[in-house]
Image (cartoon, rainbow, N blue to C red; front, side, top):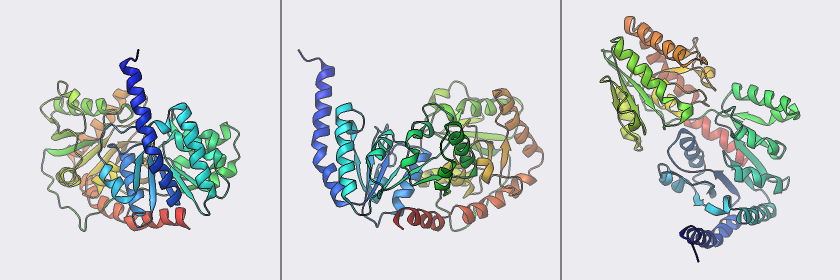
Length: 388
């Protein structure tokens, strides 16, 4: 007697088998392949979409190896590449083994195949099966210091990677420490390539009025590492101290509706670019409360419109938001949450009493992003890396 669970498994197996002919066709007809986990909403997925868009005039394939919880970037992925969710081929034991061999055989037959992956265990499992002439590259968004993080599950495959893309020098230092700790040759550090992310930059600066209350944004998915609860604490403490700010949370944060005060608005998720930009245009400050990051896309998106970041000093953020650049404010990432909250409150209090430094940062944000995170630099770097 079949249970519903068994019936569902059989249906999923049949669906996977029906995908096999197209997977086989894509492998035969292309030379450039990307392996990303999903196209759901997230800063990493925004970057993956941007990378694919660099190669929209080059026939390429993007295999999605995990299940997306929404279709936020589906259209962008599909517009730039032949995109396919491979489903059970990526995780069901017998299916996965067969697909890895199939892909490796097809790639090894090609003269100049290129394989690029990020945050996909399936991608790393493929690497040992590939011959030496296959160009293999991965991308690290953030060094997570999590035993289940990508920098750890990718560790056994480091020798199979020709290049590794990172966002800045901090990640290079993290990899140096990891390689030393795990007795990997430090010559592997020479394979690291720094390519900062890019952002679509408006043609001109956004002129803002700095009348209180100022708008303070939090733009994120609801994930533990983003620590939205700290943003709520900062907003609530600002309410109690009567600081002249209005706080807006953009993302799936309705669970906080009973915790926020009248100085805070829960906007909900926004997937439409122009709608999100309208909030950046009206905002003065964006808060990043994360305990780990690479370099968040929301910082770049906000700075394009003169939104000044106030952020915990994590990941690559201190590499770009620096006192000498006068383009934002950093808060020490203390182990004590209350100290972090107080650090944000101290900065907001100083801004409320003397807005001059915020105005200076506002002027610098647009020019800094335009010079360092423009589309031409990004495209040139990825084309040189993967096509040369």
